[in-house]
Amino acid sequence: MSRVTFTIDGKTVKAIRGQTILKAAEAAGIFIPRLCAYRDLTPHGSCRVCSVRVNGRIQAACVQTVAEGAVVESETPELQEFRRNLVDMLFVEGNHFCMFCEKSGFCELQALAYRFGIAAPRYRYLNPKRDIDLSHPDVYIDHNRCILCGRCVRASQDMDRKNVFQFVGRGSRKRLQVNGDSLSETDLKATDEAVSVCPVGALMRKRVGYEVPVGQRRYDGQPIGEDIETREDK
Image 1: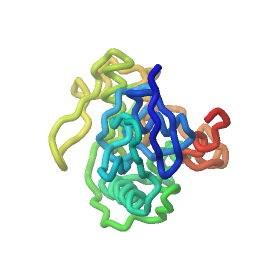
Image 2: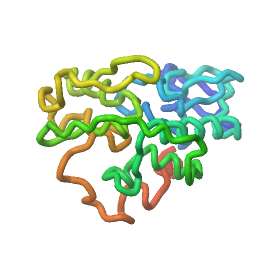
Image 3: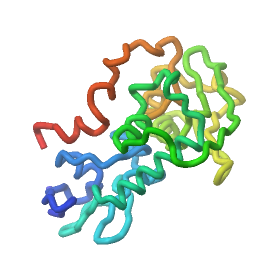
Image 4: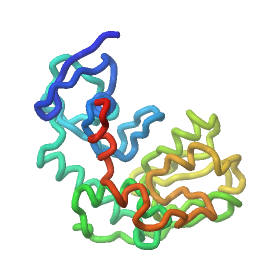
């Protein structure tokens, strides 16, 4: 298996040729923040939260592959500010009621905000009026919390072998759509991977909210990415 050597923030990393920077960094115990990327999904590069500088050029780490001798920068003040602004904007573009959301404590957007030290968004709230689809017996969609990462779209197609979700519209009118008049008219099951991969509280199973007490939730005890940074096999 052919390998390449490159650096991330001055640390020498050996990776498999063809591996993405995100995966190579993860294997080396380096966490690069991400939202649209997910371990079993084809990388998409849409959210740009994983942006790094590669030989001086901004690239999405989830789609950019490693190259021999490449110099990758990730934890610079510039990139941290860039990521912080992206996360900040995602909060104001939707309606994220973290204190009431069933996903709180498990939400990757919320966890990234904590990691970046965001206590309150710096931008003006847009307060959009979006629908909540409660028609399905076991799953619901709250479009107020959707960040258009596309994980559910890719998971439905690539992992569930269905086509329940897709995007419609462009720019500020882009939104998630299901292949029916409502979620109840689709063949979505509560056990589908598309439901599991949602990083926020947009796509949720019914009757399981708040099952884990505060203090025992995934991101109550450790910040997002710490599991990668503290791995013993890196």
